Amino acid sequence: MSEQRTLYEAAGGTPFFERLVGHFYDAVETDDVLRPLYPEDLAGPRRHLTLFLVQYWGGPTTYDEERGHPRLRMRHHPFAIGPGERDRWLVLMREAIVSLDPPTEVAASLHEYFDMAAESMRNRD
Image 1: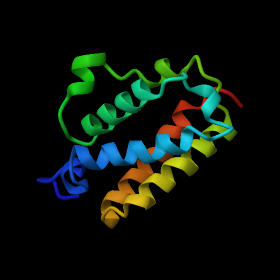
Image 2 (image 1 turned 90 degrees about the vertical axis):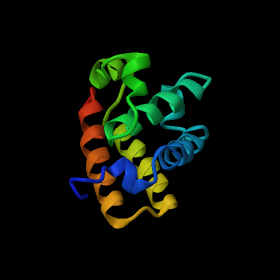
Image 3 (image 1 turned 180 degrees about the horizontal axis):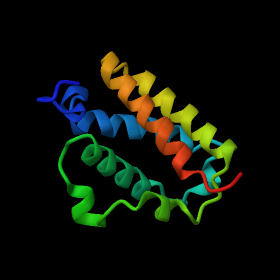
Image 4 (image 1 turned 45 degrees about the horizontal axis):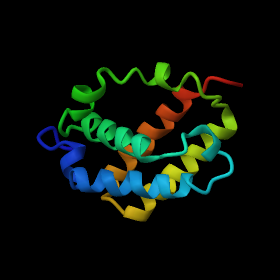
């Protein structure tokens, strides 16, 4: 990623992240491992993840304006996230990335970030 261009811009802006999160949550809706961790209505989680990723990668700061500091570990602590849930989350997110066929540098950055983030959300052995 060039220092002048954010990943947000390189990926295609908010529409890219909307599609990424949409693909991910479409898979979550029918997933036996992850679906029980989410509320019945996935609209809120879809919006929150989209806004978070947009902001994290250099886009508008709507997430902070609406929800404050991400506090990701705190927000995920109530949910039992062990190695199985972490791994399944990564499978679905990796599939979402691949489905969008982003530029190689964008895909690599997303994979690296999601690997780190998924492990940091793990709160069970």
